[in-house]
Structures are given as C-alpha cells and as structure tokens.
Length: 492
Ligand SMILES: [Ca+2]
Image (tube, rainbow, N blue to C red; front, side, top):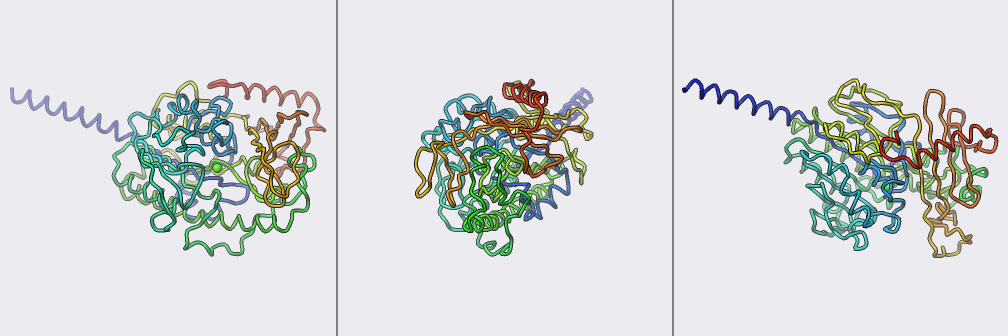
C-alpha cells in the first residue's frame, strides 16, 4: 500500500513538474515603442546602447513601415493589429475615432492585451491622444491590462497626469521624480523585479516626440548636430500634392534654424530612452529572464525636418514619415541578422500572439512575422501593403498667415503648413524582387496621384505618375482598391 502511495506521489510530482515546465516555457514579450523616431534622418544614431543590446543581439528589420504615420491611428493599429479603415481611428481627435466610444466599446476590448490570458500584462507611457480626457472616456483602465500607468493626452515630459491603475496622479517638473521617460523606466524595472513569468509589457516613453524636453544631464549634448541635409532637404516638391507643391523655397532662415534645433532636442531626449532600454535589459538579465524574453524596439512613425521644405512633422506619404526602425531580440532570433522582408505596425500584435502560442483572431489584418521555430519557416512574405492618412484641417486662422480655404494646420514657422483637410491619401507600397514603388491617390477634388520608383529614386524627388503608362497605373489602382477594402485574411 505504501509503495502504491509513493508511486502515486511520484506520478503527481512528475505531472506537476511537466505542467510547471510547460508554463515557464512560454516566452515573455517586451515591446518598447518610441514616439516619432525616424529612420531616414538617422534617428537611431544616438541610441548606442539600444543598438548594442537589441539590434546587435538580434535582428534588424530593414523594411518596417507604419500603416499610418499619425500618432493615434498608428498606436490603434499596433494595439489591434488592424488597418485604420477597419478600426476607425483616423486622426488624433475623438471625432476622428481616437479613444472614441466605438473604439472603447469594440476594438479596445480585442487588443493584444486581451489575447494573452495567461500573461501578466503591463502598460506604461504614452497611450492614445484623447485617452483619460472626459470626451475620451475618462480615466478607465482598458480591458486586458493588469498593470496600467498611462498618460492623459498626447505627449509630455513634465507637468502631466498619469492614470495609475485607475487613479489620476499629477506629476510636476522635478527631474528626479517627474521626468516622464524616467518614470516609465523605473516603473518597468520595478515590474520586472516583482513579476512571475509569463508577462507582456508595452513600454511607451515620450521620446523623441514633441515637446522634446531632455533630461538636465543631456541638455548640452550634440551641440554641433544639424538636421541631415538629405537629398530632399530644402528641395522644392513642385510635382507633388498642392500642400507640398506650395511650400515656399528656399526655406526661411527661421525654418532652417528650427530644423537643426529640433534635431538636437530630439536626440537629447533619446539619450534617456537609451537609458531606459539599458535598464530594462539589465533587469531582465538580473532576474534570469533575458534568455526567454522577446524584446521589440520600434516607433509609431517617422519624422521630417526640412524635407521638401516642410519644417517638422510626420503627416506625409514619403519614406521619412513612414519607414521606421525595428529591432528584435529573443530566444529564436539569431544575433546579427538582417531581415529585408516588409513588416508593418499591424503585424506586431499577431506576431506577439504567435510567439505566445495564442490563437489569432479573425479581425486582425496583420500577420505574424516571427514564429517559435528558429527558422521562422511558417512566416510568409507580403509584397504590397497599404499606407494612408486622413488630413486634419482646423477652421481657425493662423496669425499673420495667408491661408486658403483648405483649413491648413500646423503652419509654423514661416506659415508653412504641414496638413490640411484634403491631405488625405491612400498608398500601395510594393516591395519585392521586381518592384520597389509607392503609388498614392489623394481624396481631393482632382484625385491627385503620386508614384515613385524607389529603386531609381530613393528620395522621392520625381513624381512619375504623369509619365507612367495607363496599364501600370491601372494595376496600382486596382491593388489599392483591394487593400483599401480588405479585412482580416484578405489583407495578406
Ligand atoms: Ca507619434
């Protein structure tokens, strides 16, 4: 009898051990999402620790694109795995879907945080521009997040409110306790110290977005740095959509000074982001979690500083606004890999679900670009995808600026406007062995078209839409219609 009992105990112990190993075998996932971090203006240059700890130890994705360079739509796409035409968040206002009732009641309940039921889910940082405000639903905790510390509003470094697990907490302007990037860093490190695996973290510091406030110890760095004089810097875009075509050339001295000044400020904020990345990686290592954790480092949009004379922002269709960094390290990623296949913001959520052995929901338009197998063989390559933007126009006048009836906005300095109500476009971006193009149609009264062959013209200096033959234009148009109407698996 005793031997039977003993045998039973041994079997129960082995089963328990197997279950325990199975759970602990699930990988942790950490996503570090920078704000407005470009690739084309050498935005990753100041991030030496990030490049060393993530890019060099993992894979660099050369063709990562946002599907909408506007802040709130891009973040909604990352969270939901959906294109903007399906989740309905088209700009940074509640009326444009940002933290709107429809978002809150439908798609926010199906985000990545809701698809990892066994995971401890953590969010800290910048969320959606209207989140936390009364019209954006107030200071609720979105479903699926177990640890929640999110900014009320769009972006800030000092003097802001955080919704701390449901309670609004105001932060003032004392560096040691209030600097937002450091607050996010400290919160992340404390979580890693306490958490048991498996866990998912979305870490979203404000760097390097506006208002570009650096930590005191970094305020004098990069004193001689200037905005890169890329081949499109201060170059007229006369064959482009009217908003860009009408930019005054050459740029005013004030605009040139601003592009250089903003670049320095952006890079200084990145030094604190780099410290955050280092602290997170070191704490994962200290807790013996690093070997079983995937770390994604990416951005919600690119940025421009003087390209085609546009002083600063990210609402355009060009590569500088849509092409962003993506570094990934993790258990099945070979260090020092470079991957050329195109990947998108909408692919992050499906990829994380796949790595967590979850079930992909049918509403997701993106698809996994990594798998748990080290050869990633199950992952298919896409050759074309959608990039779009819904122009935002404001009716108020900008002081001392001559404006047309297009409700231009973001018109400083020198009355150069970055957006207007009809700066609305859909593009099909093609990347394959035979094609490297972007074709865009504007929703304006002339249905303006732009087409670039990036294999010959990487800086998009010449719009070749007027010289392309009708068969080629029709091919792109049909691809665009297909993608603009796609849902779930039809988007692949
Ligand atoms: Ca942004």
